[in-house]
Length: 289
Image 1 (cartoon, rainbow, N blue to C red):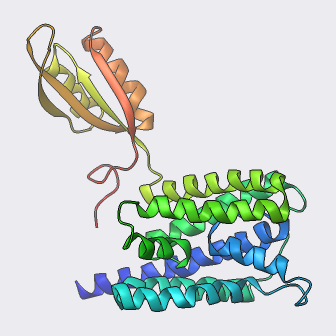
Image 2: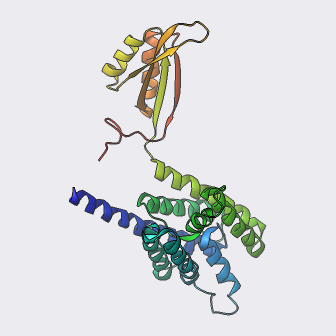
């Protein structure tokens, strides 16, 4: 058991380090290079770098602004919620700032704002998803929102984050222009979708509810021909008043066509409902550790 925990601890921090490396690539080589401000402390760092360009050669580095903004947050987080609240966020923040400082800068998208929004959003989304899969964060607006929410509990952390990030994007619009702000919104959308996909799982399946007059026959072909499990759910037709057995089963995307054909062969009048199952844990799908 201790060996499993040690391995999991190691993988968590490996995910955080690798994820922050991808985040730094998107921030350094895409968003900063093209002037896209996507919110968060990284967006503030890009703005500060632009504002201080006439004072400091090249402006204040992104990593310096990022870590400076986070330092007071970590002290507040420790004081309000304890060290356990900020432990992994501290690792994520140090890792991100280090990557921002040492990583070479490539202008990946050139002057193409659409490429910058798409590829920057995808790369940043993958990075954030990996950090979250490692059960960490990088501080920033998510930690700020968590601390603020303690005092205005009628707002959710997500709502507070959206407000803060929205303000950063609006300021970016005045600094870099409305066109870049519109492209930044595309990037923000992609970051959210990609990171959510990683967190929720990429192995999509299909779940089906089958209402049929021949539930035993349908369940039999599902178990024998598809080698999938089937569950009978007791139901009642509210119009007819008849008791019915609804068959519930989960199959992969390739099997859904065959399932519908099998059901049609047995009962052409069957009512089949198909919807997406984002992630399925269990035998035949993602095995549990």
